[in-house]
Amino acid sequence: MIIAIDFDGTLVEHKYPEIGKEIPFATATLKMLQKDRHQLILWTVRKGRLLEEAVEWCRQRGVEFYAVNKNYPEEEVAQGGGYCKIDADIFIDDRNIGGLPDWGQIYEMISNEKSWEEILSSSSGNTKKKKGWLW
Image 1: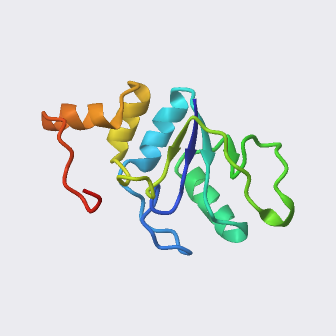
Image 2 (image 1 turned 45 degrees about the vertical axis):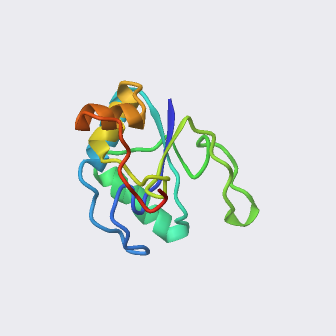
């Protein structure tokens, strides 16, 4: 499976342009996903030196990406450094509707092919959604 992962707010706390503290279990989960033979793409708005710092931060923690801001390593970056549309099976991003599940739940959803609803119902015993600002 191809999985695109955001950096700021997803792997680390939001401190852009600095690199925030790691969100608990983020890199450990990515390493488990790699061990399970998933292809990981770093998908972030960072460019240039800031992007290099993010890639190096991940590398120092044992996470190597199949590609960074592109579908495959050899893909040409758009003129002017623009972004292409990533073709992934799953996108992990803190800007998701509903926010970012914890990394244990993310791993369970991917490895056991469970939906977010199934994860919530198994952990809380019911399928009622929490009240939020949209309802």
